[in-house]
Length: 132
Length: 213
Image (cartoon, rainbow over all chains, first blue to last red; front, side, top):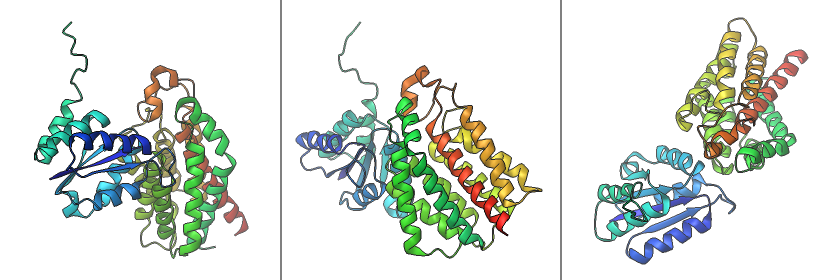
């Protein structure tokens, strides 16, 4: 099964997004990593690495919000052992919408590629569906 | 002093410089970013000093690596991975060397620049630390042919100062300031400013060391 790691500057955003995903995807492993090691706004590469290494999922998708979340996650991926790194990818999608879409598909048993594709669709999907 | 001791002195002077300029860095970052650059860099360099005190590095490369690991784990903002990469690449460039020549120093700055451009996907003109580090690495390379390590860092620091100053009119293409569009113009980039401060700290220590010698 695919698992999700949610990296945000804010502990509340990471936790809240995880809660939202779990509501639709109760069996999917979702690990929020928000804030710095002392709990302030920012990102914590050590925490991100521990979260990824602690996942039981076969494949892991990492969602990131802005700035240092991206840089920290990229740096952590380079530090992972090669066999683990093969099964981990950072998704270039909106944080909440992307994680939500990926979680729903993961719950349905889709693989990482399908979950990632669903998350990527949220980059362009209209919310208001206005025809004009 | 041997090169390891000089490297440690430089890192301590860098930490002191960040401490002194913490408020001005944070003020610059408040104008076009999230207002935490001074605080984050201070936290990172404090952790670096602790790590140096606890590990007793055996070479310049060891000392630089300790700084890198501290910055990566403690800064909390984009400056963590970015400056972490700077110190890590400089450390790799100096691996196995007990003494650092002018050419070694210039090579380390060039490697650091290449690493940070790759990590941040930034080029000169994007209103980032690259705008200070790129002219610094270039000036260091030119100075390395005939100068001492102190002269290499002095040339680098002065070029970084001019580079940081030149970020004022720019519109940001990377980092928080990029969300501001044209409103970031008219403000000096905090990352380019801290790059200048760190290089200047290194140059001062090396100049004092060569006067004492």
